[in-house]
Structures are given as C-alpha cells and as structure tokens.
Image (cartoon, rainbow, N blue to C red; front, top):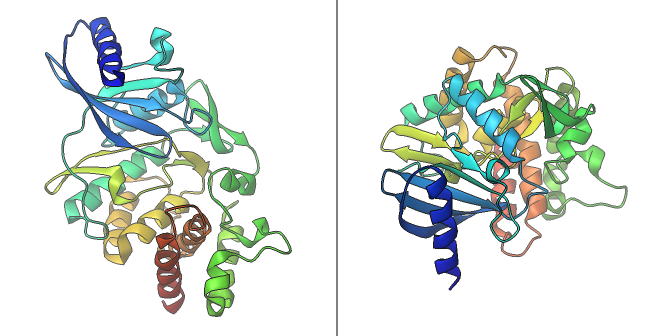
Length: 310
C-alpha cells in the first residue's frame, strides 16, 4: 500500500515535467534522507525525501550550491524539481528530484587515480562557492551562502561531535582516550595545530563526509559526489582531512594535487590535513557509542596512531 501511494506521488511529480512514470523503487537510506529511483518514459531520477529537515540543507541552498559547483566544473547532480517549488510534501517531509547517477561505489582507500583527480577538482569547485561566516548554511545573500555563526569553533561544533579538547567538559573522558590513553599526548599536539589554524584561512563550503558511499563511479570515472546534507562552512582542511581519514595517504596525495591545481586556496598544507584528520577520527570515535556504530572506534584509533607515528 505504501509503495502504491509513493508511486502515485512520484507520478504526480513527473506529470509536472510532462513525463510519465514507468517505475519507482526504494534505493537507499542515509542519516538525513531516503532515496528512491524513479524512471519516467524519458529518463531516470533519484527522488530524495528528507527525513531530518532540521539537519539537512534547505532546498534553495542545496539547489544553489549544486548549481554553483556544477558551473565550476564539479561532478554532481543538479536538482530538477523540489518540494519548495511545487508546495508539496511526501508525508510531511520535503523532497528533491535530481538525475539518477548510474554507477557503483568505489572501494575505500582504493580510488582509481582518475577518480581521485576528479574528486580533487570537485572539492576545489565546492570550496570556491562564495560564503560568509561559519557553521550550518542558513540563507543565500546574492551569490553568497551565509553561515549560522561568526565563530569558527562554534561552526565546527555544529557539525562534529567532540572533535577538539575545547569542547570537552572538565569531567569528560573521550572514548578514544579511554580506550587508548597512550595516544593522548600526540593527539593533543596535533589538535592544538587544528585550533590554531581554524581562524587562519577564510571559510569555505565543506562537504565534511567524503567516504566511499558518497562517490558514484563508472569504472575509472567519477560520475558524481553525493549528499551535501552535512555541508558546513569551515576551514578547507576539514574536507582534506576527511579524504585522508577515509582513503589513506596515496589517494589523499592524488586528491590534494588536483585540488591545489584547481583551487585558489593555495595555503592548504598536507601536514595540516593530517592534523584535521585526527579531529575527524575523534568525531567518529565519539559516535561509536551509538547503537551499531561500535566498529568506528577501532578504525579511528588505528588512524590516529598512524598519523602520530608519521
């Protein structure tokens, strides 16, 4: 019954485009959205229903940033239609219709060189979208995305959980340090570099979560970068650190070289990306306390030890 209702809803959306529904089926679920694949008599779409609108970008901001990235040569899908344009919701939730990117997710830490280069170029395009402020994007002013705060540290805490000692209460023991107290001195040294750096570079729009399931590839070709629901205005090293955390040094170097060749932010440094990757690892270690996330702790600790060892 629910599927029949969704098919009827999808058919109504396609009618607005002058197209006829051929098929609709559930595709995937993320932290903020569920995605269906919708096939019309002309093309294939992804219909993304946003279950956590308080955490996700608004449709106008999402549409604006995707077009801005695409115009700069980034690899992604641009929205075709959304709930704010049609004044319709799916069971009370906003939605976005965009072209379906066909391909598969690459293996973590084993990105083909061509995919790494395309990812670096796409991050450069993302980081060149005009922004002002820090934290969650809250509105568009002209051609600029505005953040929720003027404080870079507060902006970080709007996205990451316990990434830096400044966010730890006096009686708080971070799960990573509780499990591996021997890493504390080395980790704190690197995190101090992060804290010093955060006010040095102008903020950019960061994706913040660049694991392999955010990438759609066709062989050695990057088809598109997915899911900007956690996009946040931050220092660009947060994205570079995310690449290093999820994909390792070899892929990071390939991404970084392409990024530096495309971006105006030539002040970015690999050593700083490594320090930021430790803060990202602490975020994932903190999240390991959630149901079904326990595996994140071991992964985070292995990364932190590797960065400390150099």
